[in-house]
Image (cartoon, rainbow, N blue to C red; front, top):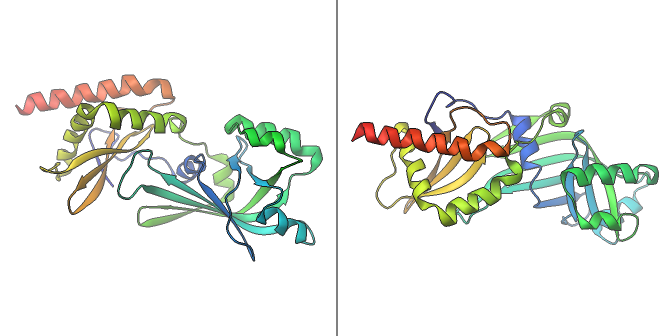
Length: 261
């Protein structure tokens, strides 16, 4: 991905932070040896870094745990990070969390459910102990795949990291940008010219991502696509800063265009 516009051009989140951000996405599958992959009811990484998985009591994962002598099975939780707008290649990243699944003990369920709900409120949590089983995934390996590369993250670094502060508003803001503000996307696209590959006639600028460092854009053309990053003047610390930071960025881009004219 090419980065353009400003002194923060080289600033990107660390691999553990990016992994924790991908972990906030809802699309996931659980794989347990000897069983068909299945979708959990929900999953969450708590503020303390514990991975929790909610599965149906009558599903494949629960059956595998019931059959295990120690009610402990090796498992893989795969989380997909997809762009919130329709793109040709919408998968931005995939997170693999592997380790050992065990049921959360009855004495710890309430506290675990509260920690789960703090980061991902789910109605299915009300069914824990009945139609749903709350599981703990003790991590052995964390691997993040983005683009053509993979990054291995230690379980300790994963637990200590925090997701991007804009993760909770990214989908809504990018859908709004894509559907209602083509003029803003066009202006953001003017920053791409600084990368040496300006947007050409027939290419379309689409929103790919948003994080505290700036926007990620997908430049789609007839023969393929490329991804670029347009940086904010400085990294943000909360979602409330997105609008003023975007306004400042757009103002700088307009000024740059005026100087060129």
